[in-house]
Length: 458
Image (cartoon, rainbow, N blue to C red; front, side, top):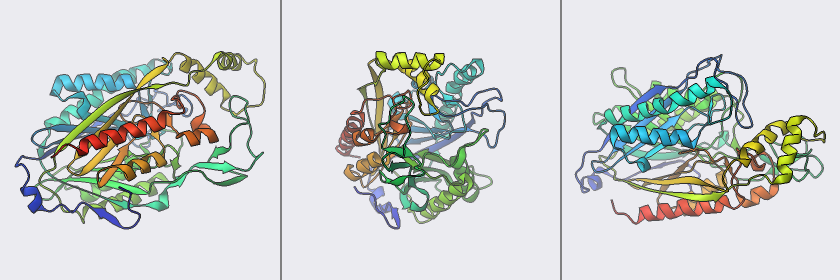
């Protein structure tokens, strides 16, 4: 279904229709665990990021939401991290299954992608970073296990509202001759991140839809709110911060929570690989919170919504460096390569060496979750807005959104036509490692999973 572009979209299934469904108790459970790093943990990434966690602007959390329809169970856990590597997800799934018997396919762990947090992946950043990574899986599993333990009777509703004023495509077509060389010394790019002098137009759409799933107790008090929006992050800077995601959850919890009954809000990252705001994180988070609250207050909550899950793993090719690129990387790191190039040439040289150790193909875990007539897709990539819009347009469900950076990290996922234009998000590296034809394969498989779910009756 095409995303609506005006007003608030609400789930309108009435209580009468719900009562006719199987009479099973719907429940939801919440838990929050602090994952703020120690002061000596570095915030560097495979490309961007720098400094250490010595200044804490606001703390980082793993927020888990368990839902149970009486027959099946799914848990979402959103973490205030830039990325979470596959091996950490594997550890989390193993520990959670041992503690709760939850099937691994029924656990969706994702990162918000705040850039002011540790990159939870192997980057040779020293013992402090490794200690953080070792403890992280246990902390995430703790949040998930507690959410399952905290299951209580609940009702559910979902809806959406458009917030186009915050969303901007950050890939700009540039005038010929206005761009310098890329990190590899090539002058093949036609687009530049954020543009600048010589910019012509953006080369992709935006998805302005803020999706909201609301959970309330039978007495009407707010138990949880799960949201999804497609903006990369609010604004970079030094020190630790959950960015606009943190402002969003704090505002929602303050406005909808009751003193004697906890309320947990969650903001997941949508298809934001080419989308940014550039605005103040506090303003962005609070604006989205106000919109989400507006949606919740107009929703009619259901007593039940059946759960279904479909998962698959694609083996996709990696753009590993050839002999010439490896020789370039070694020369750059040795200081013997002196040609004009982008200022990040050393970062891309190091990333080329890391990428050379990747296998020819890597697994990409995809998932589709059905909650009543709502569908939630997920991918471990930084998915572009046009991909997310295509999934919404072609989904058999009336309401669909995609959680990016989920169940692993496989970098940017530019569509082939975006690869042809070049620019930062297409430069081969750990942060953009998949083959040029990966996006059509991911999109087709996600849609297949959604079609499969549509064929399963509630």
